Length: 57
Image 1 (tube, rainbow, N blue to C red):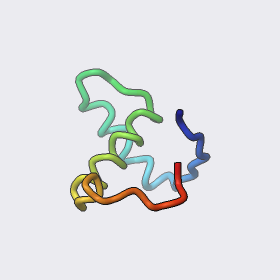
Image 2 (cartoon, rainbow, N blue to C red):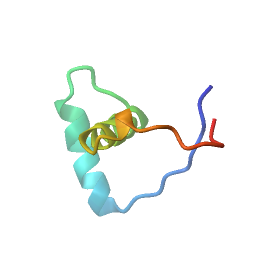
Image 3 (cartoon, rainbow, N blue to C red):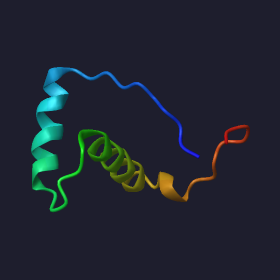
């Protein structure tokens, strides 16, 4: 199951997302690129090993 979230970001942040997408070999969509970037950030902070908060599915 996936969750849907509306994300708003400033044009200045968008200027970083599209060039990053262009550097990826598989040319992800903007939504996929944002998911990947969030995942990369969480892993870099060690959050991929953290326990999931209780009460969340």
